[in-house]
Image (cartoon, rainbow, N blue to C red; front, side):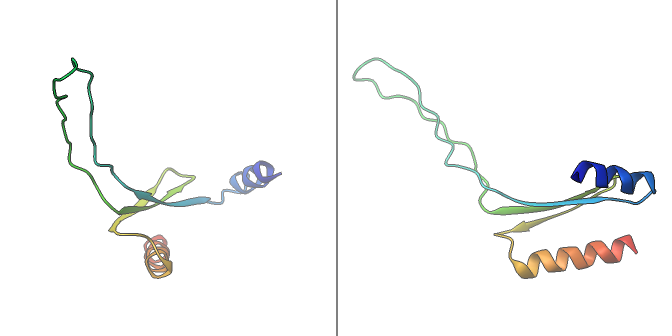
Length: 90
């Protein structure tokens, strides 16, 4: 039913926007290895990303709109993104 409605909108040349928001978090990045008893395993660390939020909108025409933020998304950050998106679409 949902797919039928979307196809109907596309047939009438309407633009459909798909919006998503995600939080990207890295980890400590520890890598462990097997070694002989009594020997210390070498550990390698990689840099990590903590608390980067992504808001992304893709249109049915293939247009992409996005914003990266430090920290978690909240009502204010999502609202300001959607207002800026509406302004750019006008």
